[in-house]
Length: 352
Image 1 (cartoon, rainbow, N blue to C red):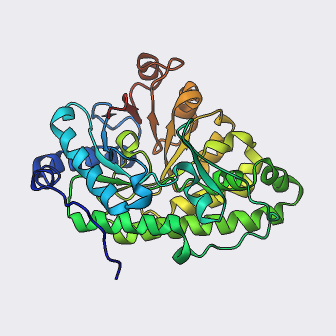
Image 2: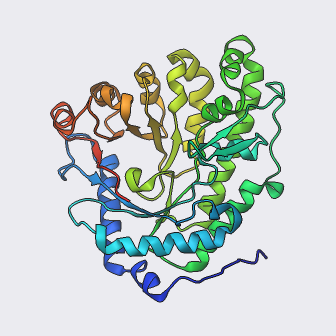
Image 3: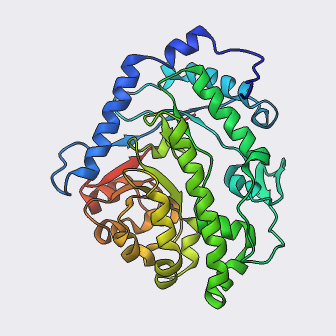
């Protein structure tokens, strides 16, 4: 049995705030409203356009996560409790969140044995590419992974605190293509075109790990609190997953349809209601494929991807909801004009 290591315990004040039944009820009402957007045909949903602007608890020492995960968790919960009164807002969905941002977007890279390091000047995690041949990737040994040990310890500490309000944001599990590009750079894209069987072998190994990790979280965390990455702005109803589709802008429709979409659809299929794909670049060439993926229920667009909001709105299925972050190229007024507010969730400015 893993022994949890605490140098302080969650205060009674914080515990009370993070089990507030009124806030829990309000959260669940928002979940029900968001879920109904998927289940009611486009045009029949009569609710107002949901707006999400949540809060994430943070330890003052972000690197404490790597030396004492349990203490990092307690400090983050204390910080979250301090914000509940300051940011409470009944006019929009305000999720209260903890984000396990271990190794940032390089969490899975670290598990696969890539060198991952923190640049203190840039305040960002980076990785170095693997030097092994594409096609020879092996399933990692999670029991001997430092990144996985931190993950399990934080999860167990969260469960140990017995707080029902906070959403638990998963690490960046990403997607098979995102991770493959992290591990190999442009070489994986070339291999997908020249020796697709070798690329496919590694992509399958990666996706198998991603699916197993999602299954782990689904098996240990309360469904109402389990959320994919960045829940304070992308919170979904319980039972929905997420993957990062950032790198799909690098490939065309045929390549995505044949080699990546089946993996992404399987990954989202770990969740009973399917889930979301995050897009932040120029991905509109893939809309016909997105439309055909049964487990893809939500498309999240920000930055450059938000400029193509109308293409997504007209090209996706009527049961595919769009989470949209306003930007200079697509202000809220224009987004509302283009969509009539249907199938749209607005991600308001993030507040910490």
